[in-house]
Length: 250
Image (cartoon, rainbow, N blue to C red; front, side, top):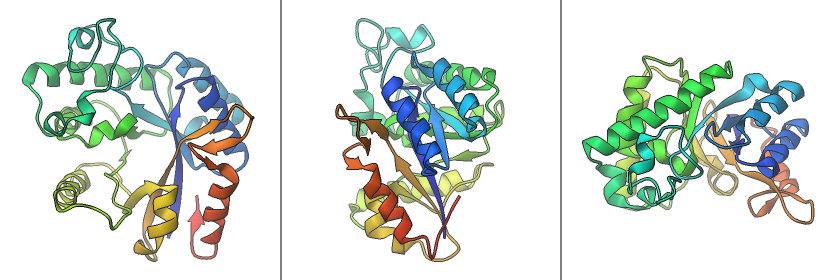
């Protein structure tokens, strides 16, 4: 199998950004994805260029945290609070993960367009797309992303999390629908996607010849320890190394 390890949330803040850079230095990460609307995005791109992983930076679409790049969406209570900042409530609602009004879809399309445009202005060459809180796997958001694939050179997209056996029937049905739809688009995809704990428990599902994407959220704790959220990065490395005989970590 081939394992791709991505560091999410690049550019979110100094802590996360420097942690991701450290993970590249340690050889843990294959790629990272940038939150172009966050204040540390410019500095993150400078760090990626300086540290030699500029060509491994995709985009982490974001409609749930920080301030938008566009004014229109700031006035929408579905997406933003009274200060015009993303509150992230919509992605917690099953209703809005499946259905969204025309006006809200148009606002989301404008914001996603702006984030993609900023990604292109950085001249980042990777062309991979995923998202904060997996909002690109919401049907209305995918609906507005698809037309933008003709405008921007997005070459690959993250599938919906499927590296697990513990899914309810509705989740199995939706993930099958979403991943099936994604595979029909002109983008590359992995066969399986999950977090490091998913990989530890269910990596055997992939089998030979399959490609797995593992999502990490590198960060430093107050004591200076490097973690993937709540797992020490040394433990993450150990899980990856266990599979080194069968897997090629790219």
